[in-house]
Amino acid sequence: MANMIYCEFLKFKRSKVRLIVFLGTLVTPLLAIINGIKNHFMHTENAVTLFGIYDSAFMFLMLLFGPLIFSIIASYLFSREYTEKTLKTLFVVPISKKKFLSSKFITLFLCILFLMLISWTEILILGWICNIAFGIEQFNFPTALFFLIKMILGAILLYFTITPFAFLAMYTRGFVIPMIVASIIVLGNVILSSSPIAVFFPWTASYLIVNNRIRQSACPASISFLIIFLVFLFSYIYSILLFEKSDID
Amino acid sequence: MSNYVIETNKLTKQYRNQISVKELSIHVPRGKIYGLLGRNGAGKTTTMKMLLNLVQPTSGTISIFNEDYLKCPLKTYRKIGALIETPCFYENLTGTENLKILARLRGQHRKDAIDYALSIVGLDNGIHKTFGMYSLGMKQRLGIAAAIMHEPEVLILDEPINGLDPIGIHEIRNYLLQLCNENGTTILISSHVLSEIEQIADIIGVMHEGCLLEETNMNDLHKRNRKYVEYEVSDVYKATLILERKLQYNDYTIVDKHFIRLFSNIDDSAKINSCFIENGIAVTQVNIKEEKLEDYFSSLIGGGKIG
Image (cartoon, rainbow over all chains, first blue to last red; front, top):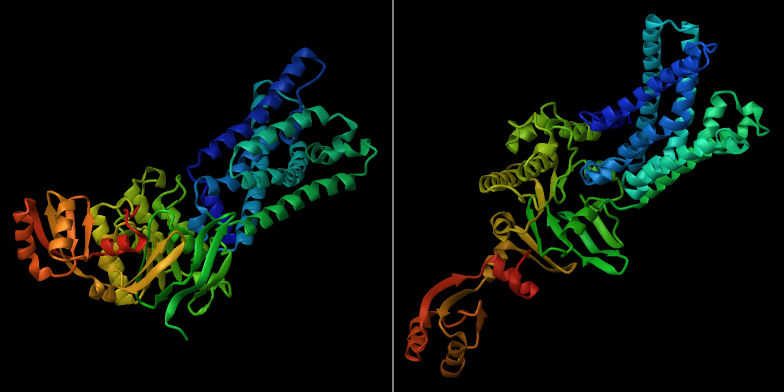
């Protein structure tokens, strides 16, 4: 399995998707800082704080950019074997179909976790630059550490909700449908994030759980957890079943 | 225990209403080169994919190394190298990196396996190019390198010389013969180029519309191939009338509207030639020939060209 995961990462070498995803993660901290500065100028009593920057960036990542960027990685990981027709080259090796797909799911998780950590680091660096340039309040390590834990938890929950895009990429053998669905999901997040049913919508529920806002709703957090986990479980199991059943043409 | 490394029994593959392979029974002996011939859509690639466990058969059995192919697939297929259709690798990776992936996934490799395989196929100079920059011939060479890098006991090669230049074809042909003769590697190969199969195969199987029409030893085929005299004449219909009515020769065929192939009375060619000329038929060429694999192939599948 370790060899398979190593190979999955090797397949990213020189790939353009790396740059696209990296730039995508860079947008979130920049937007969060711009948002903080804009608020400060509109309402001078609102100071620019590291907490505020992290909080905005976390929201953007969990509800808007995360589902889009991570679904790009999921689609790329799971559809490229079909678009580049490499399955027939790999499976004459031979390798286990279940292990092969599981390694892709693990790689997807590691990518999401890594990109969340990259975002966290980018926010810290940009916050530090802003602190030197015009000074931001509460620029301290405990705040950064608090959000590091939040972003790791967010990465885990976001991963669970990204797996349906991996299944879709495999099922449709391409990029287009998962990206369309991801865009619809993001729109759903925007519409539902402040509604009472947000706790039942896995993509908003993951944000609410990590942000500890699920307590404000009548629904227990366990229900939201269960929904998120079932989304992952169905995506994983159906992907394995579909892949094991299908011929390699 | 049978001496066949690969053996199928009534192997069938059906896609909805279309039967791609129908009750195919082939027998590939150990240490021999088996040439699988057939036109496009004959079912060669589907057969090879079934043998490699890429495609599930609808019915029938496959035995590899005298065992059912699903008994221990990971162990069985590690001893097989394969190239199916046009080789496909990751376009953003170099040839070495692509082979590294396969080596990692397979495990059990000698340390210099990648360099060795690349040097065999003559790709050792282009190791810094990514696969996306490769020419068709280079892609094909990399596909062959991937198939041979773990020194398999059996090679399954689907159209391996596609896109190769004449020197490349010659090199790969010699390498395959060397593998078979010196290492005892069993090779199952399909090709559009009949002359290539003719030069290396010990046994051939002819497929047409999913069925195996014939499986025969090349030595037997050479013995069975008939000699004939080929006349190039100005009026082929008048010439056939003379053959049938005046000379009572019926064992002939017409080829390309100007050629008559006479399979009997070969020693009477001078007499037949005179008879044609006396009756006002111009004879441009008279040649004594022997049936080749192409003729055999055409006669089996009912004429037409391979392709």
